Amino acid sequence: MYWCERCAVPLLEPYCAICSGHGREMEIYHGLEIRPASPDTLKIIGGILDRQYGASGALAGKLVLMHKIPGIDRTEEIIMGGRALGVLAYLPEKGAFELALKWYGANHLAPLAKKGVVALKRDALHRHLKGKWVSPADVESHIGVESGVDAIITCGSFVGVGRPEFSSSGPMPEKCLKVRDIEKAQAVTIPDSRFADAAKANGRYIRQMERNAVNDLHHVLSNDRRPLTATFSGGKDSAVATTLLMQARKDFTLIYIDTGIEFPESMEYVRRFAQSSGLALDVLRGKESFWDIVKDLGPPAKDFRWCCKVCKLAPMAELVAAKYPKGVISVEGRRRAESFSRANIRLVEQNPFVPNQTLVNPIRGWSALDVWLYIYWKGIPYNPLYDRDFERIGCYLCPAEHDCEFGKCGELHPGLHDRWREFLVQWAAKRGAGREYYEQGIWRWKTLPPKLKALAGKMPKSGDVSLGHEIRRERDGTFVVQGTLRLPDRLGLDVIAESLGILGDIEYDRELGTAVLHMNRGAVCVFANGDMTSSARNESAAREHFKLAVQQLLRVHLCTGCGICVSACPVRAIALKDGRPVSDLDLCTRCRRCIEGCVIAKYYDKIATPGGMTKPTC
Image (cartoon, rainbow, N blue to C red):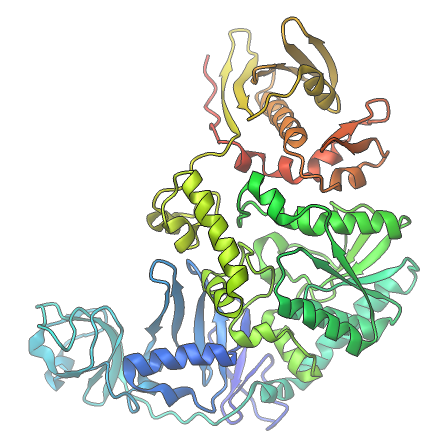
């Protein structure tokens, strides 16, 4: 990535199409998930600059970019003039943003700052200061300094940034200020510019991106006459993918899935986009309400995304089965840079959860910066929520959103926000969790990353399903997994036997209350009280058989009625009866696609209390 100093815009190739000059190479790490700072984002940053340094107008007229980097919650570098001014991070424990200045930011703000400044005596320069503590004897003056808030440091012709351990209203300790960085001050002039200028400066690059994507679509669609759709989420990526598709084909339908927990702005935007583009629009809704299912499964999480399958994939599977029985092609706006789970997506893929749906991903290799440049270059209308400081657009209670975005939801739609918060409060109280669970966004994880464990407080107790198990090795070399699956309501032995029949041959004894599942390399014995044993000559087989039996029993007992398994079955051997999946064992080929596509089976270890597999013992 490059920066044109004359035009004050980012470049994705060295050449600037505005001034015909060459840009300066920029040091950018963690990819190009970069977006233009929205009006609300600039208000947040400007408010911090005014509060801490009395320099609210420091960004006026300048092109400001936000660069997504790793952090506990939302964490972004603030880029202006082609360099990072600092890092803006949202701290869930404080419910507020914090700005950590970098040297370039201190250098830019120093001539404008009216407070938050520490002036050091020139004698302090006689020793190395970077990374060192200074004492009160080194301080010449200070104005409006707050303890724990980054201060701008001046020392003769040098400028720096550091974190003070004192406030201007109080005494200074012996170690009063730690210098993070200090260098000779530089006079920098940054011309005014807009993101629209950046799109113009990157015209050749953007045209080539567009040409490549449209060629990909022509290549895939030219000889395939199956019905064509574009899945439209209301986000920037799907808007770009749909715009590209309109250049390759006109005969397609927009599909929008109303999960029941969408932002009103998104629903209205999708309708406007379809109408202005002259496209047919299908709005899908699932049979089951999110609010009904969440009572049983609990809040969705980053590592427990049951909501997407139940609220999105299920209605899509139903639509394809009913309207496109011979198959359908769906163009999507998925990108590799979005997440690790999408890092390997290809141009053409088969949807593993929706049979007969082929997915096409024309912008799979694009960065967020590519997407935004194309939007401005092409003049594509985008969701107005982006201007309200949303980095991504999804359901208003999506666990993948930032905690600060949920707070923004509270500003825009108090009713929606309060309904979800009330549910979280009740869920936490029922399971003995602390206030941190809902006040600091801890609900968004089932298994906390290490950096969040210190903030977590008291986590929720297990729900109504528990699973404990261990593995041992018998003297004859057989491996045995022994465990117990506790459910709030017992499954009858007939139901257990029928359910496990899709995995192997079953024999059961009503008097003894046992069902035995025979599989290729071992057997699983299930007792009516929930006790289970899995035995095999091979350790991995014993573990796998136990896991499959648990997944299938949970799948039958906690069925959400989404119908994905019905659509996934290649021989139509499954039907939903009385709220649970029932298989015709005479038709079943034991391919296990029903288990592979089931949200309950996928997250079985999140739903049940994890007991932990022990090492084999003799």
